[in-house]
Length: 610
Image (tube, rainbow, N blue to C red; front, side, top):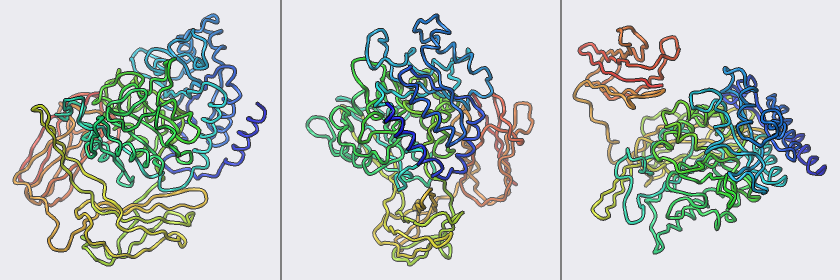
């Protein structure tokens, strides 16, 4: 025991202060400092719990209280091992509702529904279908505090998980993997039938992966393994897709997200990944992803008979995942994808920590709360999983509107500091449109989607001070279009940074890029409607005009001026975030959005539901 403690203690001493904190992350660290944080552990895990708490205090000045699970039972239920006693204890512990979203609970130990059966898996009790039920502190049926669980069955597993969290937080392997995401989407086959015939069914997994890709920062390199693009063998499996999943994970991805059918052992009927036979193929201990699955039962950690996929990823010595967010039971496809759409925006676009990002998504995404509560964090709710800090300070010398095949161009990157010594620059061809269709037994399936462009030029550069320069020719034969990009991954001894330029138009030089047809009349619409918390308003102008786009309440009072500017003819989009001109959240209800030009006015109704 003493030797293990010494090793962890040495790791803390070595890693403290090595990694520079991202500016956006700092905002959420400061909020977490204002919250309360508790780790509940059985007696045999208390030493390790204190080591993790010491690390968070040294690294972030975030205080975490350690409590023995048995002490809670003794205090709240007369020594009886009742999960409700933990909930009652947390109600008393978190006595200030204003800090609930900035707080956290970590359960340190595995648990099963068969608590009275002697087993190494019975370390921390479970409650209902979700650990969320421990942190439902009022009467609104929503979780109130972020919660996670380390599913460790013994000290060796627990120390592996804790050591990984310390390494991941303080001394990550700096490389491109930290800016890359893998999305795996199930195909349209379900037995001898087709599914996902409509988008609203929630089972059009390819379309849902497209929605997610479009919602995330354009700086993030997204790889997708789409089941529809692979041939099925005689056993009904898609082994080439499975190999591509393994190759992607081993190469390194910040996030590995799956959309489709699954269970505690398997992703997809076509076997995109089977943990019981393929776990040992993962060799990614230096770049552990956050693993998430909009699926069913992938995170059923509470069974005495087996260790689910999400558990095994956390305790596999040679790789796996740093944390997982997966459901314990059968989950709804549409509601799950809505939840993750908001969750990934929170961590990738807003840099929130894991627990806060998931809690916000459960409460505010519009996903069904019963379905959302099925999703548990196996991992530390205070873990930060996000790409490097980023900006858009890349420019093409001369600022050409269009790049043509064989053009010689120079690119300049201006960095915010001189803390970086190396740059890995990549120029990507344009995203391009794809179409897939299939028919079985009289049912017809089709889906439109895009693919991320591949790099056509790559170069490693030394950084001089706070800038870098590279020159190259636009390769002929690459995908043309209006959605090409450039991304630079820069790093030094202690931190990394990303710069990007998007969108870029590339043409083959034989014809002009296809220009959008000008609208024939004034039009406005919004989606989604009803909405919470944001909606996108699309409007079309047939002529150049001074325009005003405003939001009014049912009393005719001005709520928000969204746009007041001279614009050319065309189609535009803007987002209303449910706030008034003073940036205060407005209440639920009916609102009207009004588009006015010098010649015409249109007004439509929308509904904000909270």
